[in-house]
Length: 251
Image 1: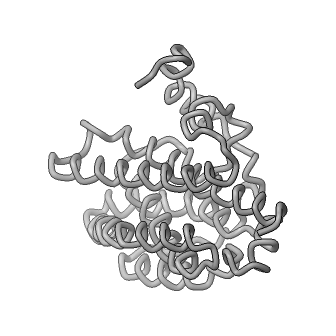
Image 2 (image 1 turned 90 degrees about the vertical axis):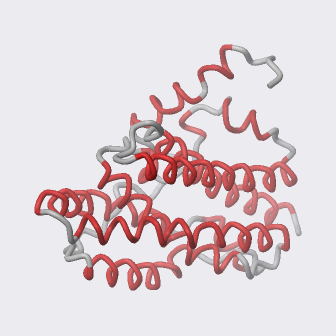
């Protein structure tokens, strides 16, 4: 692997890690506030899984760059984060969080299947392992999409409103970036745009069965992963506060 490919792979791993970490933080905000006790525990476990996946991607990146994982997480400013805007939006109501997680779970399912065939063995092995957990995540969130979409008039209305809001944000997951070409040359990763058709088929089929109308707006709010909302700034201020207050502490 030459320097250019190593740099591109490290950046790809940062994208993966930041998406997982920020979504995990948003999901963790439901801990103690779930609609029922069983679901409170279940969604907290999903948040923990996503955080563990972020740690996995960061450790692989550390092997390439030497950057300490905690430093990358707690001492980067918002402008240096590379997550999509979808995951940084406030958690909203239960419909919002369930549908966001569902859209992301389907993306991960198709993406991890491709990454599991990567020519870079550490990436392929990590993707295969993570995908097993994501299958269970998707079963959980897909069930909630059905339950809320086919539930009461209010639950259906909340789901449709949420879908109209989140659908454009989800499209950013499939924007090709400069790093993708270099990684494709080496068989390390596929371009995000190549995943869109399968994602659309899986999501539209399930969402339609839940009596939801697929939005016509397919334009993401941004195509640049360095472009964030103010929500990320406030999220990181909270998440990083202890580490920055005690930067030399050993935990």
